Image (cartoon, rainbow over all chains, first blue to last red; front, side):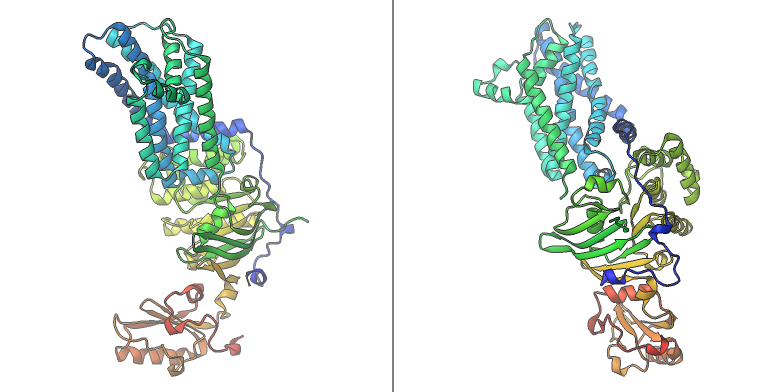
Amino acid sequence: MPESALQSAPGMVSARPDSIARLAPVQVSAWSTYRTLLRWQVAQIGGLLPFVVVVQALLAGGIIIGFGFLIPDIDSATARFLSTGAPTVLLLTIGLVLVPQGVARARTDGTFDYMRSLPLARPLLLAADVTVWLMVAVPSVAVGVVVARLRYDLTFAIDWPLLVTATLLVTIMATAVGYAIAVSMPPMLAQLVTQVLVFFVLLFSPITFPASQLPAWFLSVHDLLPVRAGADLLRAGLASDTFTASGRDLLVLALWCLLGLATSLRALVRRQ
Amino acid sequence: MIEENVLHVEDLTRRFGTVIANDNVSLKVRPGEVVGLLGHNGAGKTTLISQVVGLLRPDSGTIRVDGVDAVRHPAAARRHAALQPQGQAPIDGLTPRAAIEIACRIRGLTRRRSRAAAEELAAELDITQWLDQRALPQGGGLSGGIRRLTAFAMAVAAPTPLLVLDEPTNDVDASRRRRLWAAVRHRADEGAGVLLVTHNVAEAERIVDELVVLDRGRVVAAGSPARLRGTHDSALRLELQLPPEGGNPASDEHELPVTTVRRVLAGRRVLLTVPAGEAASAVAWATTLRDEDRIDGYSLTPVTLEDAYLSLTSIETDDLSEPAPSRKVSAHA
């Protein structure tokens, strides 16, 4: 019986609880933990950052310049439409491809469980992760704008508050949904699902073509999804003189953000 | 009532499908105590500690970490426990110094204290010369041993009531392994309770106060190393190396010319525990066996904990599987 057998052997250094100082854990502030975690995450992804920025620039160039080849004699209205859609594609691609890949790697190499074994509030873990992906993703908006200016001599009437809000919401939504997929499914399945989603975003979402080209029933599907809503908001933020977005778009995007964050958080908290 | 154990596991059961990974496991770790958890691969050691730190949920049973119900309140329990997992800690992109400081900060040490802790731990484990060398992805920058020592330092960086160390010496060289064992012992002497998972029975024996042996999910033995060795240091181990083919000359207990306290067949080795007084006849018998080419060789050494451990968990025991002593050794008590 283990219970009865667990007695100190005679002659062994006495280890009585009363003769030993009881150790007690310390409360740590959330802000301090968040900053420490951020330092950790940034260091882990550090070497990859320049590479990610280059890939973003290439993608942005691909969308803005490449789609221009598809359309001969592109007029400035079409060019403006393409260029203002490109940042959304970039942000969604990062959220739906890079984030699930990163999470899948963390799950296989033990990082995910290591972090979960630490005395850390789960929301802080998620917040630090989302912050790092924000750092990675946000420059892509600037990259898109710069490429568009160079290629088509476009000028943008930027609505800063709207642009910042839209960029944050689209990135957080894409990151949270990508994260949620990666933590809720087996890695292979998650990879498949995210590939399909990227395909859907690139070819079947009114980001790089006007919504009017889609059948009505498909448009009503997009009314419930965060893709068109996010694209329209970002577009309105970048070229406020040409495009507008609705409050409903904001609401749909915010709801998807919450859904993604809640699902991710649940997976972080859950014990198998 | 104040809970005096830093870890108290009772009747813990956890299944994966039809496999019972932990079967009614009970154990205690008191402050100041190093408890070694031994067992083969798949014995249920990692499953057990995953439940202690709240990564897995038990099917039944209780876990109390420093008085906190770890099944109901895993987040609260985690603040009282630090884990060095079997795999590497995620330190890519960091120097050991930064990694240890981060571990300190997460557990609430001040910036100044964290900086000092990194220096002290590096000196204690003799890794100062790598302290500012960055770990790179795919195992670059720092060797596996230095990474494991860093992971150990991260686990012990801040004083924590319960330390759970899963194979801390893997990949670590002999001289630093010795430092690591000393560091583990030191943490216990300062008041921490340590649950130490290891395969390294021989080395762990020197620093553990208690041992718990898991076999196929069950606790098959528990007690101090001396109690588990069970021979009061008066017995010897006769090891016979068998040829690739050919029978086991020790298969029938009654035909042996020596008294055997314990007999284990481990691969091509037969481990016999014999009373010290019969050393001469044991050697004579083994020499005869060798001359007859029935064995490749033999050795006679003092009994180690490893012998006891192997006999408790041996899968390949044939007709030799008798965990209890086959004859009384009361003469040596």
